[in-house]
Amino acid sequence: MTTIVLKDAMSAACAAQRTNGRYIKRYDAKEGELSNGALMREFLNPEKNFNVLPQDIELAEQICDYLDSKMIELIAGTLHDYWKNLVLLTEQKEIDANDFKVLALVASVPSSYNNAIGREKAKDELRIIAENSRHIGQVGDNIETEVTIKSAVYSANYNKWYHTALTNDQNLVCFPLSVKLERGTVIILTARVHKHDDNNQTRLHYVRIKKSA
Image 1: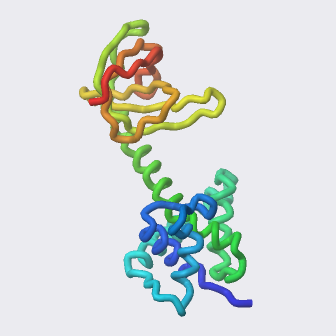
Image 2: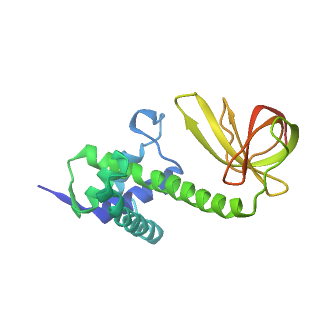
Image 3: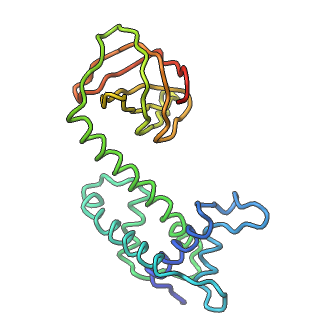
């Protein structure tokens, strides 16, 4: 059985992500495009003229270290199945070169890692901001304010995106919308103060976007 060292596969996955600039699934690849999985296999093929760069190897090492750090969460049973499978995979060190299911999983990792790191940084940032945030208005007040979107989490139960945003006065507000606003988006909204949460955050409802700043 021909095997591939996991770190080599991860480096090739990072090279594929860098080349495509995003994660392209097999069935989403357009004409003239290669999915990340197919492109990763090209980087792993010594007969092809595809070069893995030092930056790809460095990122692959960071990803593997990140997965190793998740072992405690694996033992505690708090990991999502996707990450659980990846952490278990790192224990193997090598993978079957013909196991396309596992190769496809590895190909998806750089994109998922970037998203995970982004979420964790956003959580850390919000935790620091919350220490200095103050409630705005009184419950029932109608307000108009400019905010910068910091995060958005989808709720399948309510079919809404729950946004956390920061006012110009550095106060946190949260509110639901039917559409997702990307992190960093600046808007002017009107809303009603619904509740003052314990974490120095003001919950809003009846939100209307008046203007995208």
